[in-house]
Image (tube, rainbow, N blue to C red; front, side):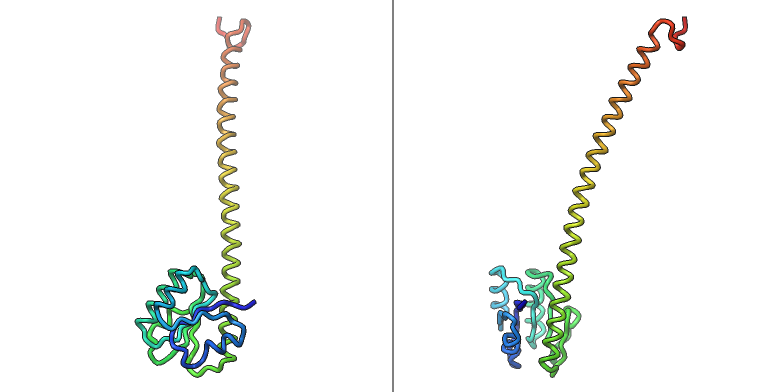
Length: 172
């Protein structure tokens, strides 16, 4: 399945063309305003790629990406102006052959898909367990209320029994 990716920064190395040739749907966003506009349209790509050489612009784009698409991996095409590589899920060194970075991007997206599927399954299981827990708590409350009523009824019967003539508990 073709993945949709967002590319931020200059496309000096024609990475957008390579990505498209490989089957990716690419939203090319050369500026922060383009990133903001694309993300505000509700588009949440499966990965966000960064080629921008200016750290301040890249940090702003990362912040926008994280606030809009928290599950999408962030991938950095490293350059000489990199000082914030820890913010990225994958860092591709300069001069890496396209076949290698394409494989790395595909593996990162696949890993992200699997994590998302697993987290969805865990959330669904958690919701089911919360529902079951709530039902059991309600059943427990109902059972305790029934036990209280039965105990009160039993106490009334015992009191009535003690009032009968000839009862062994009666002191005459």
